[in-house]
Length: 473
Image (cartoon, rainbow, N blue to C red):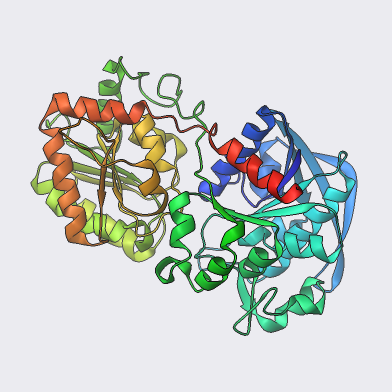
């Protein structure tokens, strides 16, 4: 099959969240399985500067926001995947892909409508013609509408990476999209008097996927449906939850170039060096005989950062240390900074995006803290287990699908899950982790259980192939 992915992120040069990692790995996995795979993204400033793309003679003429906009096509190639980027500096030559720190850019609808129309137009030029257009999240949600409006033969698949962000705009903005008026209706993009891009994509695409089986069930309920639960329930027949994988070559403690020492399951001495190096890099109290809890996260309540910070004092009283890497909500950032001042050698906060430090936290922390209220899939808990950091996570979405509760009697399990999403429930899970730390031989078993898990894309590829074949048939 020939598949064209449409997305707004691509690791490592244009990364905001897990979408970037998925776009760097899933298309490659499908290409390795023998499919013809390509990916189109906006030519963000960071992608232009990366040197991975070069300009082509092809320029697409795109009608958007009441004007005709030329969009020059750039190309690249990565491990069997053809990469395409759409140049339009008015829309994409910006510091951040989505916003200025105060919210999304004011012209977000125009920007991503341009991307969707350019992607569909590009598909008409590609040889061979794509069988499948695979759009990802609300930024690419107009792809199924434009494909259908032009009567193109390609089938469309839409993946929900996070239902909370739907692309909602005033009704009057629909006229700028260049879509048939009938698509602004209950059978299309209209939703309670507003324009909702994700809702329209769910209805107009041939198949819908999301990033874990449990999340596919959760979003059909009120609590995590964010208003679209009834739409998803009505379209459950074309909804499939497929667990994300990780790039297990890039995330490998036996070859990782940015950690202090290499190690693997069965030869763990290097991990002690990584732990000591993390203590030194983060300025933590060294070699105190107590565990390190790590977090690599967006600072947001939905990620449970408020619960983690509320329990920081409890960890300190138990002798543990907490290392946090991430940015986000300014109130949570300040709370974290205040805790770090109060416990300067036990609680350390790095308010930045630092990919190398993220690797070193996975390699050096004893436990990985991910107390999310909702988590469509999550990748960091898989990275953590691969590096031997035992996860303590909220029992939700992809965390439920990837972390197995530790069973001391059966010596089974990979971590600790908690529910409900409360400070007290998290504290109880932390105490279970601390109890495991006090039994080094048992701790070793739990750590190795996680390291032995296979988190690559091998099982996801057949699942996506089944979805593609179902719409082609």
